[in-house]
Length: 533
Image 1 (cartoon, one colour):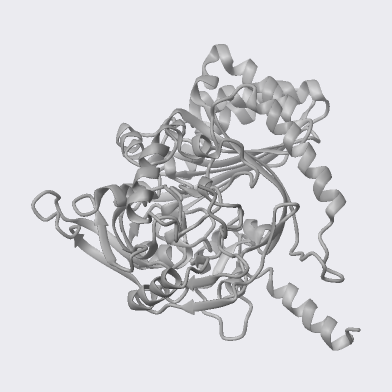
Image 2 (image 1 turned 180 degrees about the horizontal axis):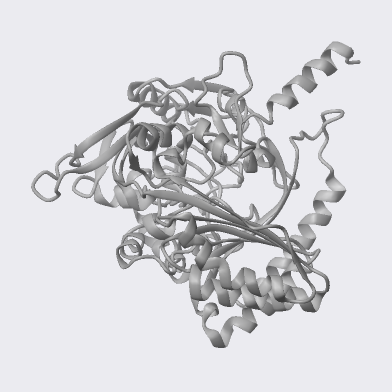
């Protein structure tokens, strides 16, 4: 029987599981502890803590020669559980975290074809918060990355990820200029537009850990916007009819004023008839953002049956966007810090992301909402679908995860990635999900709430079904989707899947790199241990 000291140690561990920097530094942990009836975090039997590409080559060769199940982990953010597997050899890229800025960069072998441009080279183990600090706070430039700052750079790029300002700067994968990758034959390759172009294309959204082990990436950097900001408020409707009217008005307002390169982030629709707004902007000052929102907020204030918290509009210089001290002055309580003794002051994260640190998932679905739903004739239909779905579960609309409203160059660059082309024709990604604090099956005092989880999962499924009626072919976002995703090849990549599969077969013909619901995985059992075809 466990004694008091064991319980105290366990409680101390679970406290640290709410610190994403602690999780990042543990070879045996992932940022998600599991998913009900899907997977549970289980450490690999052995791990290679790679410090250079040579270590990765040695690990890949050893796994291939000994027919071992292989797993790759960098930041450890994987809702779908692909950063861990029992009975496997783990290649841990955490310590490959160098970040180097370039005033000019030309991909290797492209000197005659491409002009030099500003860029940043990032090791596969680096995270976005540290990268933003180097590129923006210190360097005065912008790089397109993820909204959650503790996500790994390599994983997000390979997953085709989005950031807060994707409608202006595009997919993270579209900013990739070059990658160093160790393929299944143990060869270190440079992939860019001129060398290994098919592999390069696959790395811009075909999924991490599938085509090899990326050891470093070079990404385009952009001129930094003069200002960043946020508009936030919560609107409570006193009845379902008032909420339905609010949704239709908000849809019309978004279509007219916010579906532009300036705006991103989200609105949340709750079954309690509450609309929570947290919209981020770039390239506008506080007065300009306030003027854009004035008609909608005035309508809310004048409408019976609606009450609203005092709207908050904040804006600050672009260079302060990821600077902890400035953020704490401009937006108190918006950031949290790595609380371990001696931790770097650069180790901070958004307070809004605290819930997902070490979380245990009950259910998680996503679907892209096509931009034609914003046409005046379709706005009532969209509002009806949002209303019906929100009766079952909360609906989050992530507007930056659909590229409708983006500049033509951003759309064109996204089309040149493997991502499902639906993303270029959608105005938002709808996310319907539920989670609980860190939990492990079989661990006393920290068991998952299985009954609640399954009840939540059923409600999430009902909400998704209702919303999918207006987006039947929308597809889903690979990094944020269901473990049980149906027709996943088409949902994630659409018409691009056959080319991805051909590339996979060329560079990894024996399936050394297995990722469940990754390219080529249909030929294997779910655990990646048995070949089916």
